[in-house]
Amino acid sequence: MSLATESPLSAVDERAKPHVAVPTLHHVNLKTTRKDEMIAWYQTVVGAQVLCHHPAFTFLSNDAANHRIALMQVPGIVEDPDRIHHDGMHHSAWEYTSFEELNDTYLRLRQEGILPVACVDHGCTLSYYYADPDGNLVELQVDGFGAWEQSHRWMVEEAINQEFLVGAAVDPDKLAQAHASGLSFAEIHAKANAGEYSTGQLPDLRLPAPPPDAPPIIRV
Picture 1 (cartoon, one colour):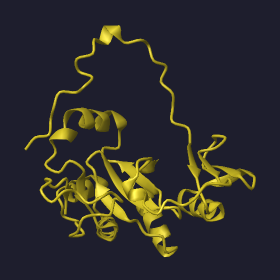
Picture 2: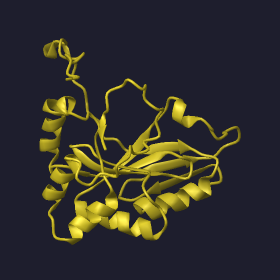
Picture 3: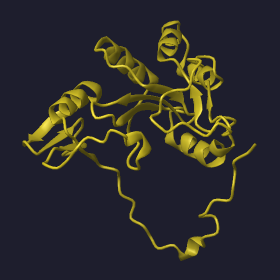
Picture 4: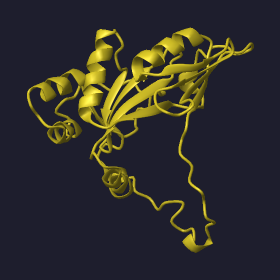
């Protein structure tokens, strides 16, 4: 069954829209009760460096920006024991320029004992989801086409009509083995999206369980 519906924006007269200066996403700011653990985790996972440190806040960056991650620990913040059922940010995402970088990172973090909680070929991206010490999901991804123009077009024209809306669950060890055997990323991506590297079970995307009669949205 197709989920395609008319976009709520499709009826808007393009001529009536005001000009919008388009900003670039700069950083995420996370409240935490375990700032030191969070600092160490982001240093290990995404190569962040501490640029400014204070008992109440720390600013980190992994590029030339003044910060990409801000961590705040101030009196009154308490841990949320039921965050899966509460609204708020689901994940932040960090993109690599190649599958080799994503795969090398997976292998490096596996040696550190840091494993993804879910891995999904979404079609537009191949994504490995990790949970930081507070339980925030961090998506490490590579573009499925190697070019934003193509993945942008795919999102507009094809995403909503996928048989499985969210994509296909994948086993990162199987992908690493396929890469080591000499397969190109294009070959791996196609096989992954077809379910050939499945884990055989639904990935844990830290969401409430769907209703029993809901159609499947992830290939397993």
